[in-house]
Image (cartoon, rainbow, N blue to C red; front, side, top):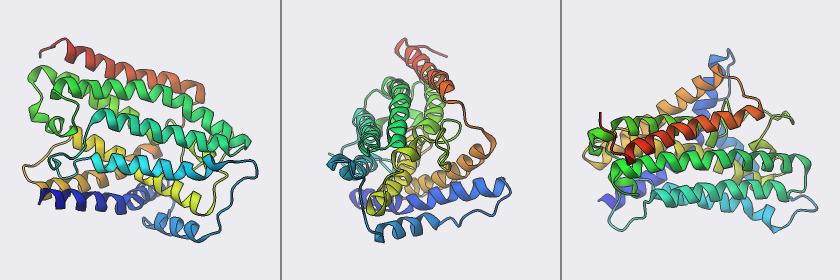
Length: 304
């Protein structure tokens, strides 16, 4: 039964990814006084691009063509590891370090694909993506380190229940949650780190890496973009959120939490302005510092 629930959860999260993206965009538009797109528009956009003819820049190589597929495969692997029903079947892979390296792999190939497009904006976006990634990865590793110390292992499942955290790890866990929340905005390319709606040459980051993509390559990149939103949000809730004792209520709760986070993300983005590019290291350093402080408290057996 647990195998069935886990597979159903994976399929639901995958299919609902464009919907969660649409919820965020619609909420942001309504708060800004615009009607905005319907919540299911991303399904139409992906389907339309999938039917178009696919071409590649003249001086690009096979790297440009497979980069969206590798990015998509890495995110699917992370999605499979997330215990969406609260726990995973015996023998099912669910390790935090593996998730960490897969997210880094996805970011690396997105940047590599943009660089291989042989375009000016692709190289600019790749450079900025790599620079931001060097700040995201230490902070994410510090946050995962707190969960490893508090939960007693690197597997996602034992860390899931907050009640398993010792009293001495409560503050450390809270610091990890704050650090992860700051990193979520950076990892997803959201305000104040990046604006996913802009095509202004001087400010775009992720959009610059896929600017030369079209057809199925663009459809895969857009689907990977929505899937990453779902994966990162689900990972945070599964690790640090509340849970029930049975699988189906856990899956239902996770879907409610994802919908709530999508709404909150739209509200946050409508209230924040984009930071200047040279201010991003300070933002990422704060996130890393909070996570590192939590790791030091957890490692030192801090008790409160």
